[in-house]
Structure formats: C-alpha cells, structure tokens
Length: 404
Image (cartoon, rainbow, N blue to C red):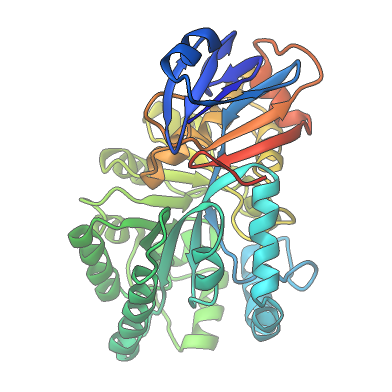
C-alpha cells in the first residue's frame, strides 16, 4: 500500500486540494493524509512538491503501430492520394517499422502520459510489442477484404491473428476486433466478425465516414474511390451503403472512428445503438477530412473520445498535442467547456469506451495516474492550461506501479 499526497488532485471533473490517495493496484481510499495513515499504518508515504497535481493517466483509444516508421513518405492533403501513397510505400514502411520502431511509438505515448491505448492491428506485426508494453492495451485485430472469393481465406487469417492475441496472458492486455470500414470489408465478413465479438464479449471498433470520397462511393458509386476500386480490385460499386453497414452493428456498441461525414440519419442510428465516436483531429486535418461537428454529437448524446490515430496520418502520438489541435479546430465551441470535455474524452470517457477500470481518481479505479509539476496554483481553467502548457510529468503509475 502507498499513500501519495499531491497538493492538488484533478479527478478529472473536479479539482481538489488537501487530500491524499491510498493505493495498491487500485485506489483504496481518498482522504486526508492523517486519516489514511491511521487507516493504513504500514503504507509507504510519498510526499510531493508544491504545486504538484495528481490526475488520471491518459487513454489513447485508437492508434496504429504498424506504420510508425512514416515521417515524410506519405502524401497528405486528401484521403485518396494518401491511400495511394500508403499502397506505394507500404512494403518499405512495414520493413522499416521493426520492433524497435514500434517500441519507440509505445515509449512516445508513455512519455506523454498515456497509460492505456487501443492498438488497431492490420497484420499482427505489432502483437509482441503491444503484449510487452507497460500500458494497458486493447488489441484490435482488424478485418479487411472486400472480395467475396477471398472471404474464407481472409476470415481464416483474421481468426489466426485473433487467436494469437488471445494467447497473451499478461494482465492489462485485451484481445478485440476491428472492422476496417464499410467500403473495404465484405458484409458477410462483417456479420461474422460482429457476431464473434458479441459471442465472446470482445471490444469492437470500425472506421466510418472518414472522407468525402467514402461518402460519394457509398451513396452513389462515384467520386475518387471509383477509379481506385476499379484499378486495384476491379470493383465498380460499393458492397453496401452506410445504413446497411450500421445495421450490422445494431446490437453491439462500437468505437466508430472519424465519423466526419455522417448525415443526420446516421448520427441518429449511432445514438440509438450507443456507439462511441473516436475523434482524431490531426489525422482528419492532414487527410483532408475536415472537422467533425461535436455539437451534432452532443445534441444527440453520442459519447465521443479523442485519439491520435497512427503515425501514418500524424506527426505525434501525444494526446495533449491532439487535444490542443482539437481546441483550435472547433472554434465555434466555448473555450473552457471544450477544454474540460476534451480532457474527459481522453480519460474517463475513453476508459468507458474501452471497458477499462481507469480514467479517474476515484475509489475502486485502477491506480493509473500521472503526477504533474505545475508552475503555480491551478485555477478553474486547469483543463485548458493542461492542454496548452507542457508541464513536467514527475511520475507515471500503472496499476499502482511506478513505471516512469
């Protein structure tokens, strides 16, 4: 048992002063240091400096580790040219992104306070790194493939990768399922994978309505995707439209990533089926997707979380930087409430979406915590200041163990 006494605690929805936290793997009690010492007389007492702040560890709900070697190889500005560049450079990027490369990406996340992440894995090349990461990991085995003649082989490969992730036994590692997108996965495969996720209570993720090209292709078999699919897959029409895609997830709450170009009917369906939207603002800007309308989500009570996506469409895996980008992207939102919602979206709400027992400084939660060193006493604008400033992270705890 340990007792830590910061000057301030951010829960993340409340700022508190004069309290200590008693914890082992989980947070056991929050009270004055005097009371906790009486309750836990054998506990190790950790003292902190003036202006120290204890807050929950950040949670990055959506990241791709397998393309972490990219810096300047891929073409930004619009989704389809970027996709062409991914195909052109895929072999080199995957060769260059060895174990050391992916470990650097994991360390980048940890150094910036990310204590849990959702890894979307297309090929399983990141399994070993994710399995040995210090953070909690929800490992989304991604299913992709639109050609019916290849359906059995594609699903067999997917099951093989899923089984390999199930063989990982370390605490804090959770096998999961991802569907790439409505345009890239045959509906038969989607139905089978979703049913499997339901049967085995596995977390589920999918990309949805990331680009205008996706919107045009699913609606009318037109746009930039038409030439792409005809060239690479000899496919002249979409396999399903957006509504048909969403209908396959009706009984399974899913992390739907991007959702920039969803229409009002689709948003109503997302709300009805209790899906969570994963917002990746930097990726959306670099790939020309535009900005999601957070007001539309909140008016419909659709939960949303903030994530970085991968280094194939980002320059960093720092969630504080991602929240900062969102802060300046959504200029129509009142500043202070948006900052608070962004911080919640990367802590308590992300934990809920990934089914993790973390994301808050509260009794019974896993002791995944950050100790930050502020420069002065925090105010009611603390969420904004945490996003804007680069405060030193003095210590990082995961399941009560100090990892940095």
